[in-house]
Image 1: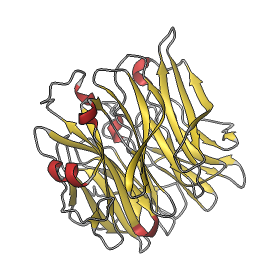
Image 2 (image 1 turned 30 degrees about the vertical axis):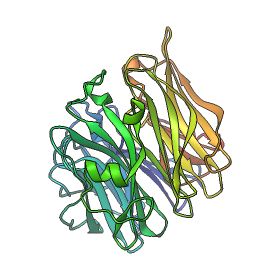
Image 3 (image 1 turned 60 degrees about the vertical axis):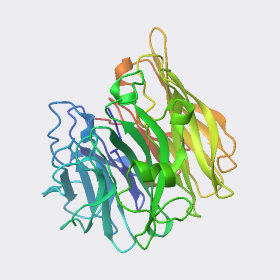
Image 4 (image 1 turned 90 degrees about the horizontal axis):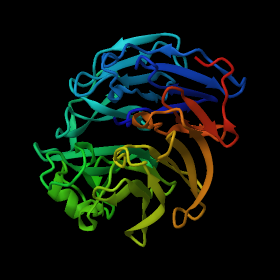
Length: 394
């Protein structure tokens, strides 16, 4: 269903990729940019969700400031699996660590300048809180701090966290009416609305885009008053997941999809700060061929570069015999004000309609040679020069 978890990083000229293999276990593979060679993939552990083929257990990877690799994986409301590399910059051996959380879904991990690791996740099922725990090195985790408050049976959240300059954390989140109290057409996973934003300052204070302090955990009422970016209820639209981008000045952008109730065609949108207010910019179409709504899924990602260049990597699905799936990049050279369609990176007719979530993900600290990872049955690394090929893929 959702692919929030997957994350990849570059360290000292090597790109490390954690991904689910055909058995849904989490191997890690490394590309050495200097020698232009790939390592063999090494499993960091066994995914207890493998038998169910549940993609909620996809891995999240962090390389800490000592070079040690941390992989979080294998949970959908159950104990979060955690493995740590036995040596800095090495994937050859992995140490199984105690679960950092007894119930977790969608782990998202980052490290602050003092070495503290922040682990964000949903603490269980749909209507549970979104929380974070902290640790120094991953040995002993704090008690959870709730950021977003879920309230059964209606109020659920889907959130995406991103680290910004100066030890800030930015979160874009959308609301889900989990019981469909509003009786909107469509299957349950489509009942997601609005777009919201909040930030954790370096001093630990959580604020909205205007700098106003928030009271944690943020519930539905407070979010709608203080954190609202896009009111889809007022437009009679659904939204879905957010992709969060932050520029060097610590100014955030949110990318999301929006479209009318019951529709199978949407628009990619960008929310950016302009003159102290949220400006909503249309990027381009989002098409899913009428099979089911995928507007909620993170089948897109926003890249914000140090210059005024932004890229939106988007997946569209086109009806036909066979069905065609395309991964395309849209570009903006004026910090998101205007967009133009760029090259198509991948066109495929190999995926059945229900398996088209190729889930593009950015490589943290990635260089120009390889900054995007995507795929379903196969994984690809892509950069300015095109695909980074592996002569002996596994």
